[in-house]
Length: 334
Image (cartoon, rainbow, N blue to C red; front, side, top):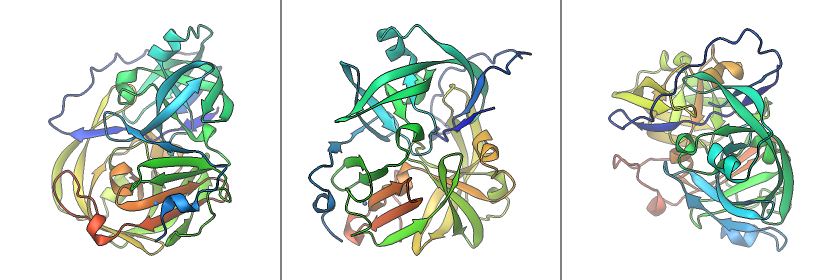
């Protein structure tokens, strides 16, 4: 059985209106031929980018995560969510219909809160700037369940590359590490191990608890598993609602984490929702404390680079005056 992981969930306040739940699929006794997919930035940054590297301005989708323009053949541009936690590149059902992708294969999609049958297609001549590639297996999802985006660029489209997110210039560059200036200008470099193509930071602690950390630009906020939740004693912030890519809601308790430390970085006082979601189990992290860091925490840095080739995650610290506020008005401290 092939496992594809994408820990992407739209986290909303408990009072937010959830997407309309879809009916749970019946048990199919013959699923052996189906693929099962689990979807759970000191120097000026542009001065580090070589002449042969394309830099794209970033847009933002419904849940304030990053998208960029993608061409499919001669059609587009389409807005795709950048998701470093997604193993599979995803296409919205609406775009698949528009492009008349009629040859579809069955798959089972396991979201943060649900499991259902889906269809998948092959997408040829996907272009990000001058880089063109094929996606052999792209699950189809309703646009409303991926934040209104036209698709998701997952790890299968990013392997062997470095993704450089510049939150100050609001740009993204995708190229090999040398073309992006190597490690020059980054204050912190954290090594990670690979699990199902995903990068997992294993030497992190949160409030003194040893924790595995996944950096996921597709998750709006941070999500911890129950093994971590049982060890932390942060202030209770009430219930959080997470709507998965199938449109189903999962509720979990939200607490204020005191301090996350990894490789010399410290992020203080940030909210974490806790739930035993399938992606943790798929990565073998359901029995040990684990945390998915979402885009709200990544935005605290000036730049973040995720290097899939060397298994490194690099951070360029933001100055005190440029630290962003979170939606509740608290200032995050490093």
